[in-house]
Length: 348
Image (cartoon, rainbow, N blue to C red):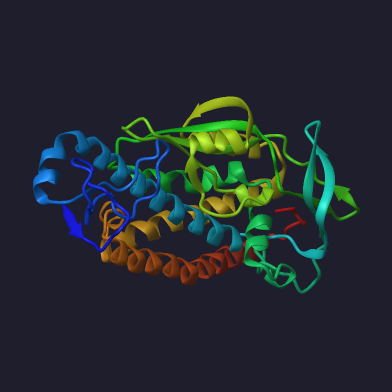
């Protein structure tokens, strides 16, 4: 349970003497919504004396680490998935940097504005899914912003099974929250061919995940579209203060995916085909994740590994899918060609 470490800055949780032993279950875990951090002791005697009151805090630290690790994996795999399901050519990108003012949902904000002009497909664009035009966005964070644009409900459709798989052995409570945001740092507008702007979504969706300790967190997979970069997981209180304006609706997990699938059926053949193509990739993606666990390590074990071992295994998981997703994209393109399907230009 304990591990020695040299320290001049910590006091024993029991007797307040200088301490150089830390509960290894708490060590290195993210700070929690309630500010719970690693607990230090000066001796095994003090540690044993403190175990009963410390036990629930220790579990909270472990649970928090599991959630943040799962959130990171989901976020990175979602970006990889979006990069490989891109289907719209881009003619040009206009960006206005610095202190630019704009109005969103009746409020004035200052930040940066992007306009992305989607073009027509050229005769050489025979594939249904196209390579993501990364060269137009040299900064990696900006690529993620564009990939996330308007995609919060699509994210829930894509990753609901992945989240369930990662967290199935926990007692976490997961809800979907539809809301209006505040304090965006950037705004992206897509322009369709013919100079037709795509309306900026008035709603945003995130997961609210509550641990058994009562700590609550937001998992926001598409935050980059508003210029919010960094970890996808944050304490709910921070999210409430910094980003959440109004809660519009609270749903059970999976409701948004069902709603999106039903809506697509009334949007025309191109949208239906797009949805079915992504569904095909999602199914193969989930099968591949199950196979990866059989040959490597289960999600349950992965999320509970010591830090160094975890970093190595999760890096391998992410690299595996960086290599595998282009093959799934190629399979979709082959199916489209065999069916004689000629896609129209869609905004992502």
